[in-house]
Length: 110
Length: 111
Image (cartoon, rainbow over all chains, first blue to last red; front, side, top):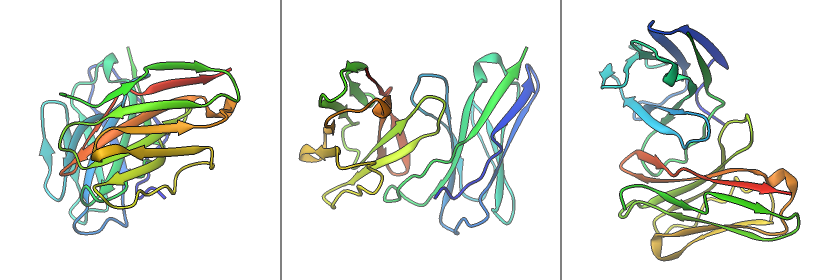
């Protein structure tokens, strides 16, 4: 079973920040939180990952709560091209089997 | 190569025929996954290869599905006696140090 839970869908106005939540209450101390997104008909694309500290890259920011039971992916200025299904997954190392949940379908509204 | 390559990109086959889907992972990546995604659905785990270990086949939906990985590199997913419910996009991912790279997938349509 997936170790993470996400809302099935969200809407966000174009130009605003999109905040996508993820619960991972059973995450263990050495498991990373990864975010991927899948734009229609394409393979999943890596966005960002983190362990304990907040992370930022050119695509997004990742905020992880102090107890690590949840996290939020932030797309600072959403565009129509950010419309996709966003997956939050937790795993330890390359030896772990990834189980994807159903993700969050993000709709960017013009 | 620079990324994970899958072939063919599209495959239309008649019900009852066998199909083979190929995945060329990134050189040096030790782990390889196959996933399936039906229309409007999430990613469904099928099988996982890690180095020389026995593959984790727990996600294969039936004994019509099999996969092999030759020489620790190229992988082939075989579906025998295809059924219409096998229609989906089949995605391959290769892994190194926690970074997962997905191919563009093979869209299989069984008619």
